[in-house]
Image (cartoon, rainbow, N blue to C red):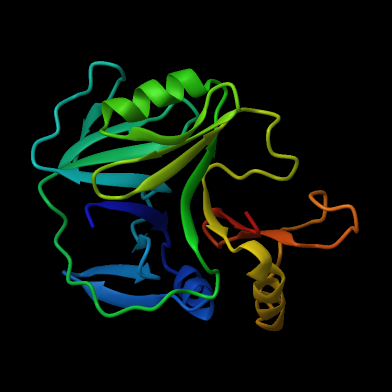
Length: 222
């Protein structure tokens, strides 16, 4: 994996406890702390200057012509048009991945980002090697991924009738989602929002979580 998510966790084990409680595998590699469910790799960065960010490792990043990046540590730092921090690091990531299993959250479906302009966001991410896999601007959402299999979903305002934390990890579980929600409840993990708007029976079949660093997690049925 050369595409990861950075989550700040200064002077605290709260993030590690949150994710391991949900079934993520916690490990340390080359003096850095990570959690993974086999589909997404998350770096838990204790540096008080760290911020939630998408970190993309490459052989030799050069400043993309479509966006403004600034020199930062071992690469470049910028923001996508919706304000999500993006770090471009030179060289491959140094990591030894341990065996892992899927988390309690289910089927990982990428990172969701709500955008003021899908067109501008699409141009930004395309310059970083992401290509359209599904969806259209007219539909109000577009799915992207890069050669590493790192997936993004771009949503325009007004498409999602629920709280939207930018960015949010996304899990889609179909008809199994109510069972997964029940398991999460039994762990006493706080639920940010219970969503019943997608069915006529008023059944809570989708939920949103919030990790200790302020990253949203959608646990949805599709």
